[in-house]
Structures are given as structure tokens and as C-alpha cells.
Amino acid sequence: MSKSESGKFKIITKPNFAKFVNALIKGAKYRVVGVKEKDAGYKKYAFDDLENASELRLDYDLTVLPPKKYFYPPKESYLKFNLGGPAAPTPILETKPVAIIGAHPYDIRAIELMDKVFSETFPDPNYLSRKENSAIIGIHCLNPYGKSFAKSMGTTTVERGFDLMLTDLGANYLVEIGTVKGEKLLEKYATVKKAAENDISSKDKAMAKAAGKYKLSIDGGVKAFSSLVEKSYDHSYWAEIAEKCFACSSCTMVCPTCVCFDVREDVGINLKEGTRSRNWDSCLVDDFAKVGTGENFRENKSSRTRHRMLRKGKYMLDRFGIQGCVGCGRCITACLPDIASPVEAYKRLKGEK
Image 1 (cartoon, helix red, strand yellow):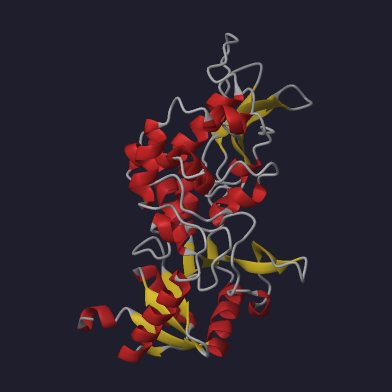
Image 2 (spheres, one colour):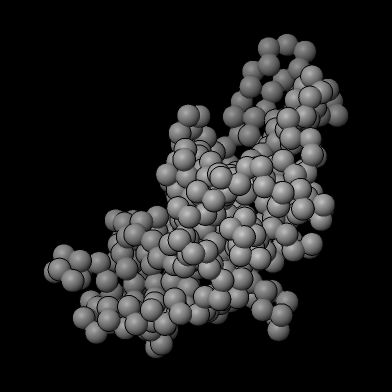
């Protein structure tokens, strides 16, 4: 580790980290959200607003929904317009800076993909404004979810996309500074000290131990997955899982990289004004590819289940250079007929089962 690199790492005791979080909450600049346990005893976790640092559960394995909802809400109105005269469309941009505490590296990688989606071709002011004003405090996952295969997807760690990144070292957190914003947050709200060589070594050991806990994998990782789904366009597997698919969209609703939305306009009861809004949508539902003239370009479920997996494995990678699956395992858990797993798809297409 070079001298300049060593300056990126700090040590903060857990009591001082709690004080740091509470100072962020009290500071009121940010809406502070973090991982909280839901339904105590059932090990269900979710990102939610924090009132106190004691609510945080940074030892979690997986949240039900990814933190993307803070940049790209499930539903939002983004335009107002008038009727009966000049439309006078007015953008609706409601953004309060948010500090997200506890994002795992795979979710940060997914946000990196969303940054590209919402900034290239047609830059999205709502998403970009929220993202610019946010602060992301990540934490390495030392307790992988049983259905996660993030190790195969190369997303157990990230080099960018965070302002601060924590690693749990027992009594302390090792803090890696990712941005100037993160450094200023520490300077203003936290009490830290410079990390020593053995702190960095402890982090590497903890990460190596965590890597050994993953139970699911895709041999060959991202490239092998991408190549196989492309070669398997006409494979009978798609029709087989389509027979069981409910087209309920549960797999896409929990996915950290799914970005599709539906646009609708609603007119007020006074018939003088209206709003345009967008809602999360899913390529698995019946009418997703239906156009105004009535044609449906993916009318049968087998074409839709295939499209979803190609989007995860190939399309996003080809267009943006980042894979559309980060290996979190949420889709595997959410799918009631148990047919959404990229790991299972890979094995079946490869002929292993």
C-alpha cells in the first residue's frame, strides 16, 4: 500500500460511528436512511428512514428492495400541465439530499449502471439531481445471503460509486474514503484516526473469509453467462420456465438493475390541469411490449422470460459495459414458482442439469 493510498483509510470506533450517524440525522442536511430489521426474528431487512443510529443493522445479509428507490422512486409525478389553453408544462423536481448508510457493493455497482442508463442518450434531471445531492456510505458484506452469487459477478467489492466504504473489524470500522464529499463528512461529523497496516490486513482477511461463504456460483462469471445466454436464444428452456411463470413481475420489482417504467397522464377532477407520472414496469408482464396499434412484440411468456435473462446477461453489458445482474439473489427469493434464478438458468442452458 502506497503512502497516498494509506491516507484513504481511517479507523472509527463503533460508538463514534453511532455518534457520526446521529450527527448526520441532527444536521438535517440529509434525509438519512439505513438498513433496519423488519418483522423482528424473521431476519428481513429494508432501507428506511433513521431516527437514531441504534436502529441500524449493518450485519444484514440482504434487503428486500435495493436502495435505488431513493434515486428512482417506484412512482413519481414529474410534469404538470394545463388543459383548455396553452399546455404550459412545468417540470416537477422534488429532491431532498439523502444519505444512504449500509449499501452493499453489489447494490452500488447496480447504481453505477443506473447512472449510465439515466445520463446517456436522454439525461434524466430527476434521477441525476437526486444522485448528485446524495451521499452513499457502503459496507462490505461479510455475511452473504444464502442465494447470493455476487462473487461470480465480481461485485463483492467496488472501487468507486461510494463516498465512504466501511468494513466491520469487530470493535471498529475501517473507513475507506471514496470522494471529497465523503472526506468532508468525516471532517465535519466524525472522530477518526489514521488506519494502520494491520487494519488493512484485517480487512483483506475478513473479505477473504466472506468470499468463502458463497454457496451459489456461475462458473466463468459475467463473460461466460453473457456468452451462454446469447448462444441459447432458441433453447427449449425458455418455454419450459414460461409454463410456470406467473408474469407477476416480482423478480423485476426487486432487481437493483431493472430500470423500465410506464408513463401515464392523469387529469384532475377540475378538468383544467393534469400530471404526467411514471411507475416501475416489468418486461415480464403481458402488455409490456404492446404498442398503440395493438401489436405485441413479445406476446408469449417464453419470449419475455428469455428477454429478461438476455437483458441481465448480455444487453446491458453490451450497451453500457456493466452487467445487468449483480448477483444479489433477490429475484431467486421473490419468485414464487422458483424459475427466476440466473444461476439455475446458466446450469440448465449449459446442460449441467
